[in-house]
Length: 349
Ligand SMILES: Nc1ncnc2c1ncn2[C@@H]1O[C@H](COP(=O)(O)OP(=O)(O)OP(=O)(O)O)[C@@H](O)[C@H]1O
Image (cartoon, rainbow, N blue to C red):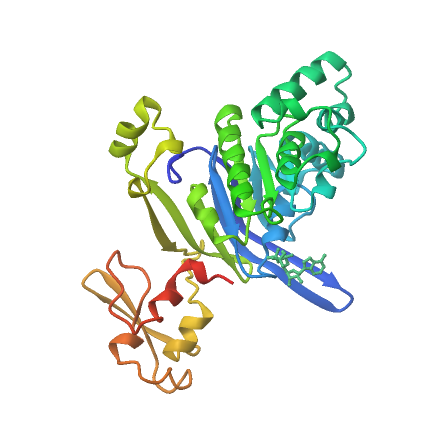
């Protein structure tokens, strides 16, 4: 698991803005998004419908261009690329796995032919070279024995594993998955995520996955939640180094970790200007309007509603319960049952 603060970044987004214009209407899909993804990280992006996840993925994949800001992938500045160079970037640097298998695979070709197709389109003319790499990828996704099968002869999970191999045909550095486990059951979803994880190690890949599935946090290094076109919170998976080494030998293999060796830490994100988003449900619960009072007390930042400015806070909360401690390294004070849950990223929907 790469260290987010010190590892070399593959993706850097700074103050990324995307505005869609339809006639006189403007939709701001990304509103100054900041994100750094270290090489070899497996990252999940979550967020409510319309929060900007697909927009971000399309920009990272070179399928769309931002309106403003900065985005570099593998030190390539995507904003400065010509259309032709952006096409080349799409073909060689990025692999996509979509939720609908029909978007990933051509039904009348075999698994092996599907994997060879992107290589043909990228000008790999040597058939033996293509076939060898296709077979290597089929082995990596555990489906070599299915190489002569067509789409309809494969299960949904198998189709997605072939789709992963197709996405890797041109040896990209970045693999993007838009709900790749969205149409399969939870056991199959786990197999697909294990395939991603193994390939990340084998091929030094960086993997970014959009998901609606809360269980994904167990299988990635970090989950970032997008709210209104910005990163609002992130949850980092932390593995006890000592225990991991004891369990997994020198490699500290993640596959044999016990749940007690893994913890999750949630952070609220500040943007590059130091701005902090207070989620709508917390603003409503505490009766926060346009302004707040901010105090520093015992190493904590306390944010208080200004009386009379945000409407009535929810009834039956004591004054202590109306204080939201949003980042302090300290425990959130006792709240009424159900209220604490609202601070958790699991309520992103
Ligand atoms: N091509 C487009 N033209 C106009 N508006 C768009 C376009 N694509 C997205 N939007 C708008 O931009 C915002 C973000 O959309 P986006 O598809 O990125 O959200 P999302 O988080 O991926 O949602 P979902 O989970 O439903 O796929 C939404 O308000 C959406 O309506």
